[in-house]
Length: 214
Image (cartoon, rainbow, N blue to C red; front, side):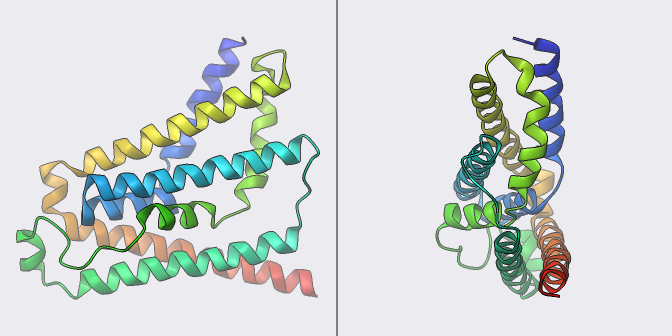
């Protein structure tokens, strides 16, 4: 085992996973609005999406799967629409609540979305270009063992475990009193960030599709 390379990998993925993005924004929003259990089910869905993307990347690296660029662009476009829909629904429900109501309410004043794990999975899988990221990222650390297959397995397991732990840590932080008192503000900021990501991603994917067609 190449331990220096392994430690470098752990440091890299810890930074990558903890950096705010659509998944982190969704988890924080769900934790602030609906509590630990609901947000944890969201995390399970996003974690499954990560596992599927990594598995797809592993198949590409091994030569068993090829990627259709145009297909990825269309899926990315639809994913951005879904993320934007979640963000708009959250903003609409939160902005309909007065600040006084939000400060006194321990939970969200609106009904919870059904199937949080499915929502988490769809947000996690909505950017299939992550497959390309994993294809470029994992080969740098294949040398942690003498076997490429074993190395890829270890890298995958560590990613999934750290992904789960870091997102659960975000949920745990949201249980703090100061965060609960600012629940509405955090939810609005998270949803706004999700909407921003959706708009940027949609525009970028649309331009790529237009460029591909031309």
